[in-house]
Length: 377
Ligand SMILES: *Cc1c(COP(=O)(O)O)cnc(C)c1O
Image (cartoon, rainbow, N blue to C red; front, side):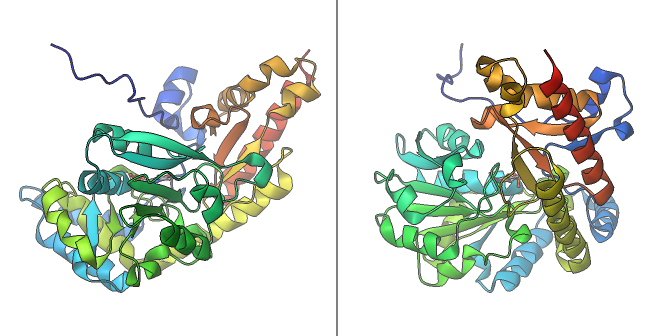
């Protein structure tokens, strides 16, 4: 007995966890600064923590009222009908629901490269195929309707990530609108706004009033600090919103997650502090990191470290290991950043925005690591 041919299903490569690295290095987890997974450095809102505690005694029952309450609260926030809000276990869960709703076997999806691995993974789980459109470092990873449509060949779903992970680039709303108008009627444009809170750019949810081929995904994992609970959602057009009942995994968003998300939604101050700190941290990294960076709309900054070996004497054949070398060396100094090799950017590291103290420490450590690697014979 064997599973079906899974050779095209590449496993997800997550950022390294604190426990894992601490064990490997023989350090205490508290000694590490983890800036590899774009998590909220302040953790969840205290109100969410309280809701989690209060819910503990109620987890004997399936989540029903809490799911309805969260759906209604999100519908009010986005000024859409409740049916249009597809609550899910993480935004990744919403991506799966959209795959289930849209993809017939062998249908194609068009995804950005570099980009978020789960779009392609979800398509393949649902017997779909994956095509890519490039975002180029030379253009600062600019996202335009024309650039995407150049590579569009009638795919069933086109993914746009804005702000984009791992580059931080933002796709302006008029470009998304032009893209939605430029694709065929059978194509859904999915706008992944996992980092939407961190940018000034307005959400694409406003496009749903006039388009039935745009859906937006959002998550509580990043700005709201609830990554460990797995709660997110899609906002979809009214025309086919009722498909949710036919594709969602019953009760996949847990009672605890729904209650925590409801409490988190009410704590504006926590989100504001988080966003303000991330904006400060981005500026600090642009200004102080001794490596070229790209402007980011998210809670992370992409840095080019490929020339550490060019500036040193190791020669450019090792350049392709630059990100791994920098991430490894920095980890040994207690700062975990994301080696972007798995995103197809082997000369880049992505550094999440920490607290002010964490961000300052990370920049100092990375600068020391860069100096050391350059100086190596
Ligand atoms: C983090 C992230 C998500 C969603 O993560 P969940 O934890 O599943 O909500 C979606 N898209 C991108 C680009 C992300 O970085």
